[in-house]
Length: 241
Ligand code: IPE
Ligand code: IPE
Ligand code: MG
Image 1 (cartoon, helix red, strand yellow):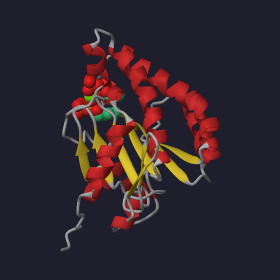
Image 2: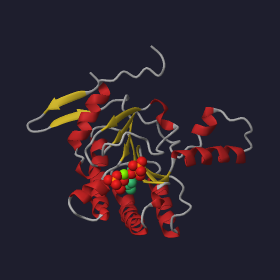
Image 3: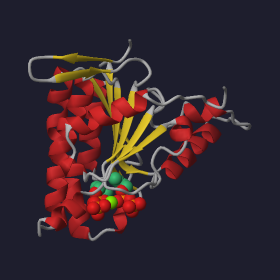
């Protein structure tokens, strides 16, 4: 059996196979998590950043090749400046330590989204991390200032620049920010909302969806196990029989 569970002395171990190569997370609910504790939203984001590390590591441990996380949407600029600044500071801190960590874990990092409005320093650090980790075998895509619509427009404009006058699906796929990895098999959203919020619009054409009411900062590896088990009960038909 491809998906197997091994009972060990104290811990169960789940492993995935080629059917679950790519999982994409909409990390939602940081603000509500903080509010429940009478804390500012920023506190929820810093807790969320810790959980992001734990969950992405766990996905690697169970054999998931590619993880994509939605960290900041093209619409999230509408939030108060203090919150946006706090999020940018968290990204900055993460990127600073990312290269060392990712080399050890054999992870290729890509920052997907429109980097134009980000600071020059942040852009340079992102480029260094992407360049330094590009030959690694696992993938972590971090969506910052990402919008699915924006990504498709970017891909089409890039094809036009290349002189293509009649676009094929492949012309677009080759120009998506995620062009180095498989389409997401599973899109996992926390915090109860059942929508895409402009995430991976093209890539999600045949993704499976998994929603939980658990707020992102409360998410644990056991929640991932549950979603994986649920995923393996599904039959993907892609329009066939
Ligand atoms: C997700 O948590 C993180 C980002 C969108 C940056 P939220 O900040 O959206 O948390 P809620 O949905 O308000 O609880
Ligand atoms: C989606 O969450 C974006 C991220 C998780 C980064 P939002 O909290 O921004 O989505 P909406 O506003 O509830 O649709
Ligand atoms: Mg939200």
